[in-house]
Length: 240
Image 1 (cartoon, rainbow, N blue to C red):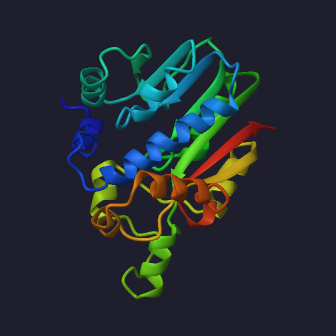
Image 2: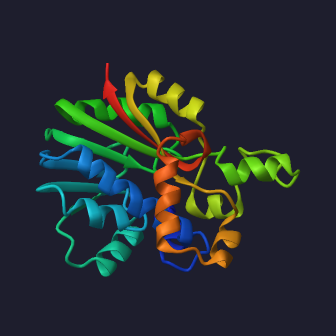
């Protein structure tokens, strides 16, 4: 029987308009995490997705274990990144277990996919070393372009999932407030909260503008201080 997660493979093969956004988001935040975790040697990462983050993070950690539940997504990643040194393990996040403990755990854009994000965050506390650091990144329902669309009457419900969201297997959007609430309910404190990529217009509009790399980088840099307006939200969380 086909793994249900394999049904979302089409969203990760590079033929989607929203790959423009994904390349920006997913190439921006891994170096920020790596810089914050200088000296850490082991990383547990949940989800392969497009493979960008795994490829980048694997260059910064001696031990890098990645979990993913889709054989098709794993095969796609290995074909795209045959030399990546990360160990990839096929498993569902909810059933994974190990005696190994990690300096860093990254949940990058996976909490919007799972049935119970609070349970996932709470369960993975035990895989952190004492003093270890966890990072979560999620999509923001209230990103600037969606706020503008809502005020213009084009987007009645900012929490509504699009056809692309369903293709990706998304179950929810987040806001700064709902992410903080889930972090709190899972038994963590948010030590850092920042935005990933301040997105002022729709994806098709931004593509048509053909913005320079310098402008794109500037949108990411500005977004750091405006998580409530950015495309994604990045949080560093510490167990209580």
